[in-house]
Image 1 (spheres, rainbow, N blue to C red):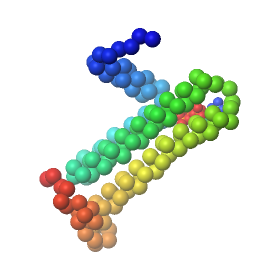
Image 2 (cartoon, rainbow, N blue to C red):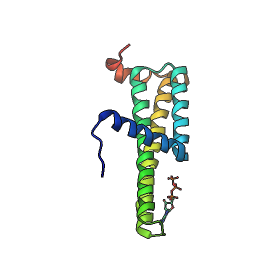
Image 3 (cartoon, rainbow, N blue to C red):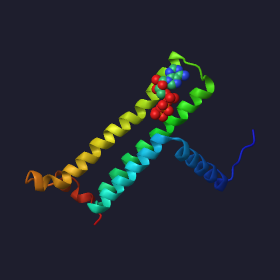
Image 4 (cartoon, helix red, strand yellow):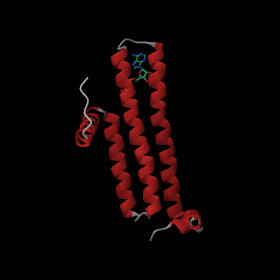
Length: 138
Ligand SMILES: Nc1ncnc2c1ncn2[C@@H]1O[C@H](COP(=O)(O)OP(=O)(O)OP(=O)(O)O)[C@@H](O)[C@H]1O
């Protein structure tokens, strides 16, 4: 097998892989759409650096888990395109990566939004502002 050790070529191949995934994976497109929606909400609400960090971290986990899931599905289809109970288990478990990442990301985003509006809704001080005030960069 021909191998490339050139860092630019490795980067190029990785970008090509990402483009193929974006073209062929419907769920990845949906997740990227949601990611851009979250970015828009972040700009509208003027997120703090620590809020951006949390949103970017949780979004990257969702996107990477979706890509790992897609890769596992393709490997399984390549190994055995026929129905097989073991492949079913592997694919279902692989799909659960994405489910877990999405569920926790939704909870994380809800906490960020609630934290923003807690003072208006409940008349409380923002719990994050109290706990994370030392981490604020601005
Ligand atoms: N070869 C197979 N043998 C047994 N079950 C399978 C097989 N292929 C798919 N399945 C079942 O169908 C489900 C969906 O698998 P598929 O490969 O079609 O993924 P998909 O519809 O592209 O999923 P996703 O939306 O996560 O990309 C799997 O989780 C599994 O339960």
